[in-house]
Image 1 (cartoon, rainbow, N blue to C red):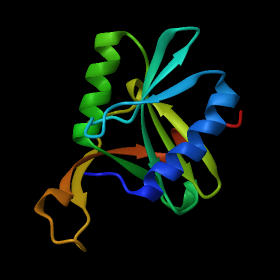
Image 2 (image 1 turned 180 degrees about the horizontal axis):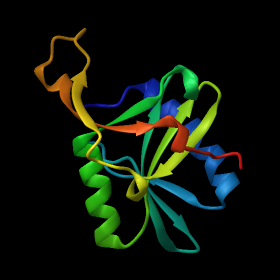
Image 3 (image 1 turned 60 degrees about the horizontal axis):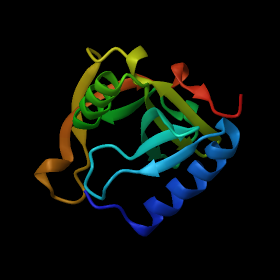
Image 4 (image 1 turned 60 degrees about the vertical axis):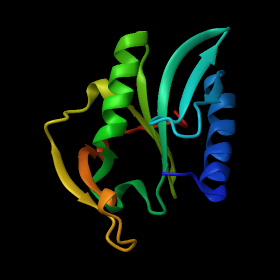
Length: 138
């Protein structure tokens, strides 16, 4: 799926904040990469990350979904490069994250958008409890 201008603006706003907070640099992967960013500090790769923006509060729903293909890409890259794989979500009430190594992938379902009429919009997703996500402000 191609990113929109708004997607990139949301990512830029969030990564600029996190770069200052975490003292690292976010670098985008290529346009059609299954994951969004690599994180660097002092010239070393320290993590890889997937970013999502959700226009709701973190506690509005019990779970947030991570597409299975994105989870697999984060997991394989994380394991192969021996760095954490982060799932970062900007909600209306803050930026929250989790290390995907702590997530139970057996909690999954098949769901997706139906408003666009695309068969590929219905896919397996991993359910991540929003309560396990860490506030990036801490």
